Amino acid sequence: MLPPLPTLARHALDRGHTPAATYAILARRTREPLPAARAVCLALDIPHAETTRRLDDCYDALLAVPRPGAEADTGELLEALGVFDIPKTPTPTDQGVIDLFLTAVDAMGGIRAGHQHGLARWFTTGNLTAAYLSLAAAHPRPAVGDPARYWTALVCAGELLAAEPGTDPRIKYALVGCRARAAQAARP
Image (cartoon, rainbow, N blue to C red; front, side):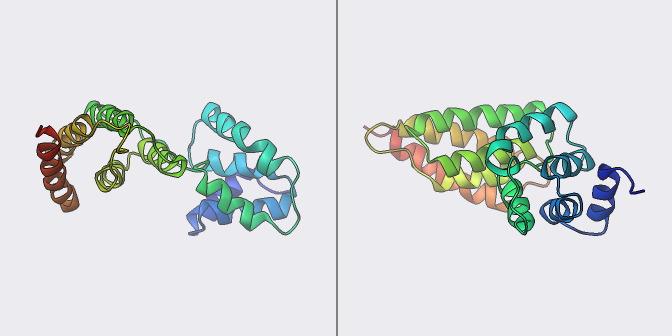
């Protein structure tokens, strides 16, 4: 008799398999994609309610009708969609930074779906450096964005991030650029 699927998933993850590869191993073995995906999430200590929500969101498209031989592709898609992202509880500073990011996104005047998806994943996993660098490299839409509000929000977020111990040096460089753009946007 096999151990429970979450135990098998933990073992595969402990041996260095990615969550996508772990899913593929379990899905091939069981031929049951939903329990395989659930096992990987639970092995990653993603809470049961969050696991259920994430799998409900992608069940019809990826797990309802499994394609034999496509387990590795399905695992990669699940990983790319953030199904296996381990949530990090934000600190009060993190939440303040995320709120400023959301202000900046609102001031953009529209955001591409892929960029929005990436930001949501970085917020979930606590990778605020990647989110900041991504937003600092973007620009508000010319006709509908609010450049002054956008760059001001990013300056404030960058200052909070730069004040944290062990800050990635790229934050400070991006902050310099955001300050310059904020000053330029403030000019009449």
